[in-house]
Image 1 (cartoon, rainbow, N blue to C red):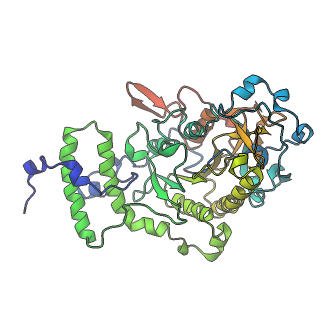
Image 2 (cartoon, rainbow, N blue to C red):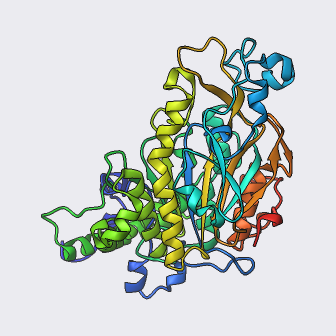
Length: 481
């Protein structure tokens, strides 16, 4: 057919036309706009003005899947040694114990002292466990929060809660809200990238866009093999770049006709955007994931490990203008889940820390050396903490149960204080008692650092305005530099 037949195009089955061409995540928008004369601001990922002057421009979110123990990482509780071996039921109320994981019986549990030693590090004297020898060298860049608390100690719920602010799936993730609020600084890359080693209990809800337009969900990079795989990005060998360009132009015309009839379908618009971003990414993504372009000294700094490489890629992504990068560590079988029947607390946390410690410390060091730490907020998070007592009826190896009353997370760079410890749990490390910080407060503070008012960043859905923090949350100004 030598010319475009509009009447025929209207009869084409769109699903068949688009079959097999998707990016597999989302993220693209703009090159066709340039060629048709449209403004770059028409793109849903165009850079947007924050509500006020931001302290940070980008986020690298490090999520330790499974519930890292505050008592073996950053919350020093020497009094547990005195009470080690005491029955948990003698020190904690039925209400406290019944509010934990309902699948666990703590009636015969014994108080367990920390299994690793702690020392103070840096000029700030921050307490850090022995299992983080590299991270202990950069604590003067960190704000430690030892008073986090959440609303659930169930893995799937806790993971979704920490990412979306809600106890059930279907709501936008933190990364999606940030990209929706600020757009992306690189039109050749998505605004939100997730480096995922597997699918965990919380599932894709942790990085999807919920009821926000699909353009704002993460483009997922599969790192399970130790490399970086993005499905459906490469062009077929028998298709030239010019032929692909012509295909996209035809598809744009077909999609435009379809969109006129279905103007309210946000998923359609996101799908159309995704084709264009994939086309752009073909030219830039391979270079961003090619670590051979880094100097030998930088690669040595991060360590030749899968997690170290992910941290290095995260730095390269934010350096290129990607707004929000998340690294999921230990997703398969929730590797930070330190039960006795899952390898035991000692082996679990020593192994997990050894896998991540160098990469995290290198990320902070590298960002600072390149002048990027001031603009990049690094977040270390997990879904909840662990109990001060071991599990009843344990097997040969000791382990701790789940608890959401008080645990630790930290921030670095991006406008937070350096070498600062905020809040505290009680003497057993069970409850946040001093300056407690909820997951809503945590989200509100991250948005604030990015120049976004958590009460004003809203999206109307089903007749009401929704926001990341629901009707809760306060900015923890004491954390800000």
